[in-house]
Image 1 (cartoon, one colour):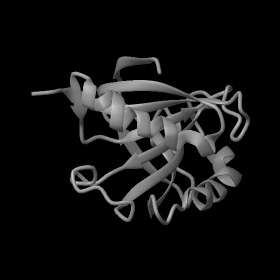
Image 2 (image 1 turned 90 degrees about the vertical axis):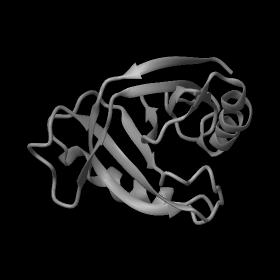
Image 3 (image 1 turned 30 degrees about the vertical axis):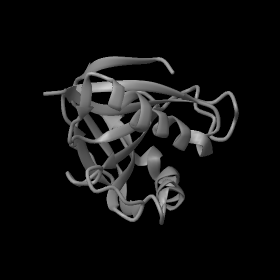
Length: 160
């Protein structure tokens, strides 16, 4: 699977968040709560949707599918001057990211993540960095369509 490494410039996101885990996945609930109100967000940059995960620092070191983390659904904005009622803000800070393209149905995304974490990352010159992970769903994203594409951004740093 091809990837690229990029230095991300800070992104400001407005959206909604929940606490979830891989075993009790509440992603569908999150997006159902966000999508009807996304048009209320002003000053957005582009039309891409952001699915963001904020993991506790020990999440991967002591991995369990029951570990809880924050999951966000949002849109990038120029600033936080106008945040709709019921929505929150998050900043994805500057940093180095490995970017992969997941092709195919969203429900098969776990296969891409499995490759990244069990094959690519251990063999690479990088280790995970404690910053938000996220996926960008742009015009090529078609949910369960086999031709769907989304970008998966994994925060990394050079191994010590």
